[in-house]
Amino acid sequence: MFEATTKAIHVRVEPQFLDEQSNPEDHHYFWAYYVEIENQSTEPVQLRGRHWRITNGHGAIQEVTGEGVVGEQPVILPGETYSYTSGAPLGTPSGFMDGEYKMESAKGEDFIVNIPAFSLDSPYDQHIIN
Image: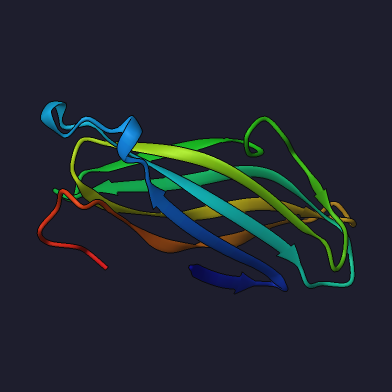
């Protein structure tokens, strides 16, 4: 599991290679990643947006930006955890992801929460990144 804390918001990510959704002969590899966002602060926060950097095994970077996550912009109360699962395809058998969440405090102030870098490793790569 990969973890990072920014301004009392703790993010945990656990990637999993999905062999059944991958096709190495066509250079198609797919991972699911499970994310937990824990509000360790004393005030509610709302997840407003996301920015991902997805880097394949050749170093090519794809950036993905959007509102919320999985169609939601959840409010996370103090002491609570919000979790979701999403996925990422790559054209190489390994790579990594990192990024940021755009959060809004109860006072209406925007701030950035770091998403820890995590590796996307498959059994089809002889040179595992992490």
